[in-house]
Length: 222
Image 1: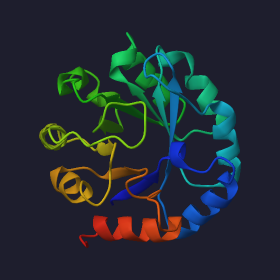
Image 2: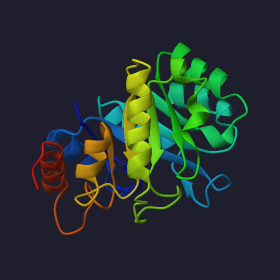
Image 3: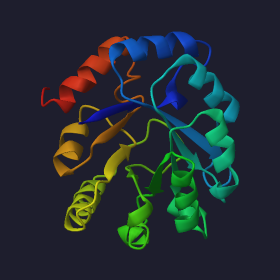
Image 4: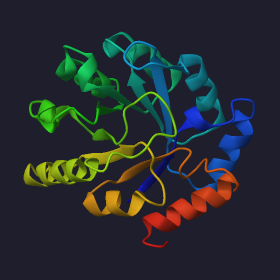
């Protein structure tokens, strides 16, 4: 099943409850929440209190994307806030395997996010503790960036590796995911699509209309 994950970094923080109600009713699959520390990426966003608030507003799964140094420090915090999935960056920790194991031991899905220039071989010895991989199709930190075309091959190569290993691991794509990039990302093997300003939060249309259009793209429409 192909899934839509609105990026709450792009939502109207003055109308979070209203937006989430509309997105829930529009049929999104999960919410993607970016946590940035101003060190690993040049931006600050959101935190555990925001996650707690969202948890009270929806029953949809909450996917926490931690873009912070030493993410192992925050796993318990976001688990207690109500997270269902946590992805950590391979580039940010010396204990990737151990941190992924802890995420799973707490009953959450464990993901690894990798930047555009990071090779897939960082995953070689942790596939057994991964539920999903986040392919960053832009350099992380800010919304509205341009999709890096070389990432299509990266998605395809990851899909081939997962298939060769006979594993059940989902591929999430994050960064400028919209009309121009969804079809080919899907073709290459992506299964979860993080929707930001290029799709779910595209200006000029309602959230409901944007979700409908995004779902249509995932189903092969235009």
